[in-house]
Figure 1 (tube, helix red, strand yellow):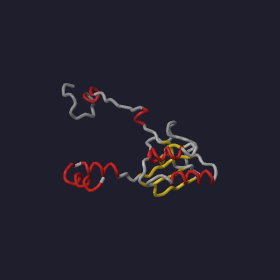
Figure 2 (cartoon, rainbow, N blue to C red):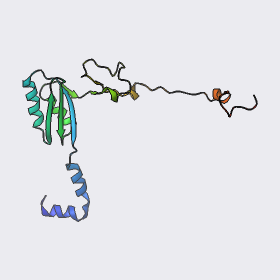
Figure 3 (spheres, one colour):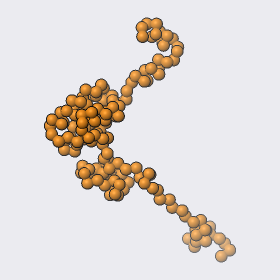
Length: 151
């Protein structure tokens, strides 16, 4: 880019702010579920994910099949890199059970989930219950102080 390009951006083209915004990556914590059977699998996944640009740390919990990657990375690139190790990988599908409105429904409960976790479920997509209160039943109620005075 040279001095001329830098000075033209600095003098008022206004594009230098957009350029800086595009070049900065956001800090993410990406949690994955990766099927690992032994220490060799664990090391293979850790080595592959550590090689990504912007990764600050890779933590692996083989008992829960959970990999946590922190750094200036994009989640889809981390998932793609984890899948390149020939291991089954997906975004961590579980949330703490107290974060779900109905943790013991069929959609949320998963017996393979770690203790205290259930599947992430969007209940808005499952269906909503709406209540409709009939205005005529309360209009003539004895409990309503503003009820009809004809009666």
